[in-house]
Image (tube, rainbow, N blue to C red; front, side, top):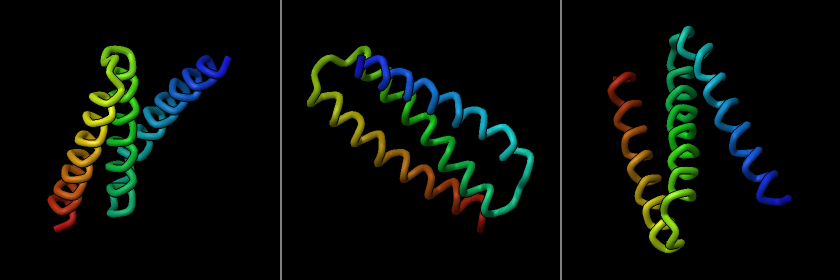
Length: 86
């Protein structure tokens, strides 16, 4: 039952972040740009995490990939923010 709740929670989180991206795209200012980047990369992160959970069976490998992916996302968020703001 716990696995079902976690799966449902991830599914709902993916749908909520996807739905919240649509209205944010229509309003353009610095705050919404920051929020858009955070939500977009959070949505990507949750999706990649689910894919890795399904297809990478070694927990250590999966955790290292997630750590490296988080670092990569933080670097990309920084560059996207700097590109649009400055």
